[in-house]
Amino acid sequence: MSDITAGTIANRGDAPPATPIATPPVFVWPPRPAALAKFLFGCPGYFLPLNILYMGLAVLTWFAFTPSLVRMKTFDADWIAIVYAQNLIFTVLVYGGLHLRFYIRKAQGTRYMLNRREPTAEHSRFMFGSQVRENVFWTAFSGVGIWTAYQVVTYWAFANGYIPMLNWEVHPVYFVLLFCAIPMIRDAHFYSIHRALHFPVFYKRFHALHHKNTDIGPWSGMSMHPVEHVFYFSGILIHWVLLSHPLHAIFHVQQTGLAPALGHVGFHKLLTKRENVYSIGQRYFHFLHHRYFECNYGGDGTVPFDKWFGSWHDGTPESHETMRVRRAKAHGVM
Ligand SMILES: [Zn+2]
Ligand SMILES: [Zn+2]
View 1 (cartoon, rainbow, N blue to C red):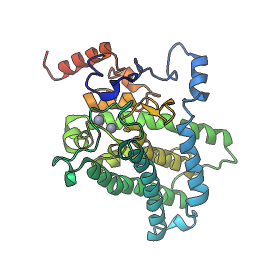
View 2 (cartoon, rainbow, N blue to C red):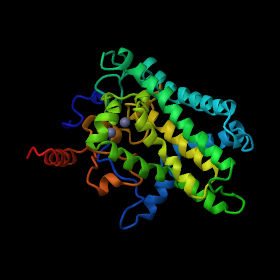
View 3 (tube, rainbow, N blue to C red):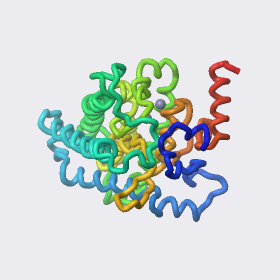
């Protein structure tokens, strides 16, 4: 057992997370076409299963739940309330569902858990004396509120023709390509804002709130300071300048709103009642960020800025040592 995994209870007889954590074979040289095809079309891969689910949810939202563009030409409490309610319902289902399974029903106990302790601390450093209550508060009010505000203004701007709206019948190939590229655009944006939030001036004021969660759970994912939420959801602004359709914006903002639940689940495998074990993605990657702060600023590494800028922690002792030296140099300890 390495120094990195020591102390986590994932190792009570279960396989630890696979290391080294590798970057997906997208931006690699020389190109690896076979590996890229497997990543794009395999399962788990770029599309399957998660991004297909988010894409399906966006399509369902646009066709079944979104008020007409004519109605959204003017701001009106009725349709704005519908959008907020949708987002809140999706949030409760996804964040609450994962929390219920892993930490209330404890469906797999501590098997494959990354945390040292469950993310349900009762302590005065949290608002209301409770980690979960604080996490839910910031998620439901600030998180879903700012998410909805961006979405509402974007709908309104599309409805009034203030931003360019793509006609998918005229540009079907561009429509599909942009739709498929959104998770990568999101990954690059997340690295950029998250890296900035670790500058001391922003960290102390805003991002430290998210890092109160050293043991992470689904609700920790969007437990952020309102200013961080403004940064975090700002990726949707790309649709104000890039020719796109409201469906692109919905997919973008919903994935931004919902992905942190699984990203902070605190487990690296799903264990079923029949003892089948399934991967739930590279959950160890962001867990290491919460444990060591100054590494792994990006998402799942599809756009591997962490690798390019030297902050990639792949979970190995060698990578840990590299981070330790880099951190010591940055803080002038050496
Ligand atoms: Zn986090
Ligand atoms: Zn951070």
